[in-house]
Picture 1: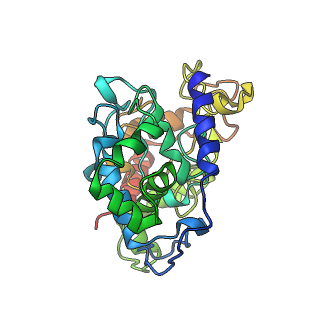
Picture 2: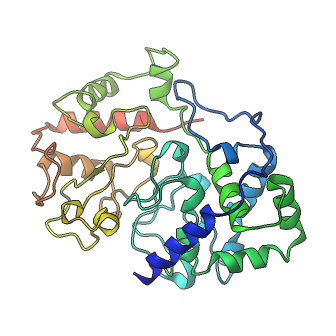
Length: 327
């Protein structure tokens, strides 16, 4: 509760920063994939080259952690589709975290951040890993002091937000950079948005029919262009959850074991799966859903035994692999 109170204080401090003095520039073109809508972007954090440059440097710099060993990119590798390939992420002093690192690709579209939805937007999400004992184990005021001793960061912040490094400029710059991270150049996109009807094999076509049909039942939670509806669901992987999930935020017992539905884009490259990395392969994931789950009291009513054949399961895996961004 102490850490939650500290973060709430920082959110209030963050919200009180001056916003009216920022110069607007809406001309920087984001490379939004074909078929995707334009994401919502706050008026006081429209993208500019300077803001993106500042945020990108912060994202890859371990200076944000207490001992300068952990950066945002330590848990979100570019060559792993902005995940880290671990079941549970590792932070400062090799401390084991509490959850699997989700991809940041297409994060611009998410209405809430983290598996439990505890943060409402990208501008505020950076507060949690910096303050977390398990991640960067630092605090924003000290980050600000540190950056203000470095001429390069003072220059970058002034160019981006007309002010020296501050909680306001740091959090917004990282959010600005993260809104440049899109994925939408997969075989599925070629088939769907570029009308290449020869892109899929017979197995991939059968898998897609299963995915979007009642027989496979995947589309209820993964039927959007992001392959997530951003809802919170208990998918029955346990009878007892050591991590209460959404209930950590709502304090509602009906939310125990509910976690945000993840995007399936690039799922071939983002193993292991689930909030705790408990499944290592796509085949394991499909077998779990085929079984109908463990019947936790809060388990989604959508889940049921699917009775898929081995061929069906193989076809579903083939389709899921068409969601890999190949370019």
